[in-house]
Amino acid sequence: MSEESNSSTPPMGPTGPSAAEAREQMLDIYPKKTLRKRSKQILVNETPSTPAEIGANSRTVPGIITQRGCSYAGCKGVVIGPIYDVLHITHGPIGCGWYSWLSRRNMNKIRKEGETNYLQYSMSTDMQEDHIVFGGEKQLEQAIQEAYDEFKPKAISVYATCPVGLIGDDIHSVCRKMKEKLGINVFGFSCEGYKGVSQSAGHHIANNGVFKHMIGLDDTPVDFKYKINILGEYNIGGDAWEIDRIFALCGIKIIGTLSGGVSYDDITNCHMADLNVVMCHRSINYMAEMMETKFGIPWFKVNFIGIEGTKKSLRKIAQYFGDKALIDKVEEVIAKEMSEVRPVLEDVTTRTQGKTAALFVGGSRAHHYQDLFNDMGMQVIAAGYEFAHRDDYEGRDVLPSIKVDADSRNIEELKIEADPERYNASHAERKKSLEEAGFTFEDYEGMMRQMAKDTLVIDDISHHELEKLIELYKPNVIGSGVKDKYVIEKMGVPCKQLHSYDYGGPYAGFKGAINFYKEIDRMTSSKVWQLTRAPWHEAGDAPATETAEVPVGA
Ligand code: CFM
Image (cartoon, rainbow, N blue to C red; front, side):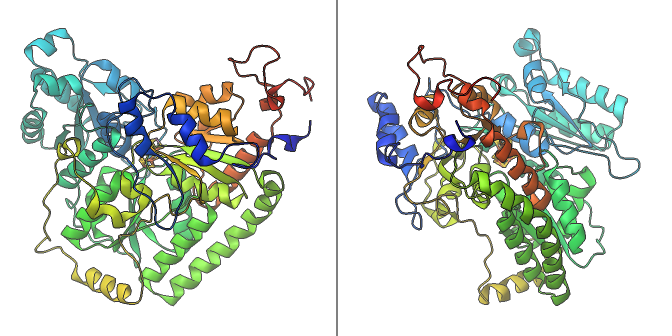
């Protein structure tokens, strides 16, 4: 059997049903109420340029195996957890602190003398039964004091877990008291796991807290011609470092990357930037908007995953500043970097062209990674987010029509006003004149516009639907997470973890693209997948592509 045997299956061609039929088969087993709900969350992308309305950001049906996480995960684990010199204390039973300890793979290194990296520690109040019965505020106060005595950090951040919300511990008054007593910044997050319908609620809570307690505390001017922040980049597998490398070559200063590889000082000073660019729209659009309202810093969406996205984003940033020298420099950097990318891409494409992929990840990567697969001539036949909102699927123009339900109403919307002294009117003027010239800000087109016609879009995919998808199409690779990785691989399909990168990466920027192309080429060209047999197949019952026709050792 040749290496290409697995790649010749057209995505939704003669060997697989149409997307509409596949959808029917996925929905087939559900009882009436579940069927109604899931029908809205599984769509055939019939009109990519005017995407249909998708059901998103709603509660998962109990009993369905979902990939989602909780609000605490979104707040502590995702948005704030990566800040390396803030001391993070989980107020709750030990499990929440333990399972969110370095499990996300956001990487950090100390960059300045005197800085500390606390992320190797997992700090928790380790609540026991008597704290649940009699209250845990004293325990929290003690934990903050102990952590301070031991480490003397610049700031301490406290995260509430489910039981803390249930028993009503007032973490915020404890934080205020300790802030005054210790003379350092101490603040808390009411990010109890049950808030909202997924980790997305935790992102919003985190954005609010970072904005209230950190942004704008240090007005020291940053003496650099082009200064930006990158919002929604978390340095998984070192992505932010590759982005830093490219910006350093272009001569653009990144004050803060929120929040991958970032320090407390970077965040308190990042309102001095001239521009915010947003990588992960889902997790941080709130921050971009609040910073614009208060400080006048404009924002637009970028994507450094995939070479086309990287080039486009760099060019747009150069155009924003509008300086010929910078525009030329960016072109020079792109040309040089592409001379390294091109030969690798040409080589891998000879093997990856025409292969298929399906992506089910978080709230932005299922979209961003489509660019990398497209670079390699691969087709994404199905994709979906775990917890994104309609705007991440359909584009931000649907924002006014999104209904706010009880779960979303739970999350505080901060009322922000322009800062009387620090609002930078010249940024706003620049934005206005660029807009008049056709430049777009506050833009996100969403995933569905970029996907091919008649592909499947599946929100909060269930275990059953994923199995059905594999059974019907057997994609050459699936991008997903550790919760379903081994289920997918038992079915004979390689799975690339797009959360943790399976210990690989970086995959952002130019060098990252090279890493990704090689990795996907290796995974989809390997013969080992043809030797695996799905566990539910009885002997002699497996389809031809799954039988052990390949001699062992081939
Ligand atoms: Fe944004 Fe993320 Fe993602 Fe996300 Fe995440 Fe992540 Fe993700 Mo895992 S912030 S939405 S909550 S890009 S941890 S770095 S990979 S699910 S697609």
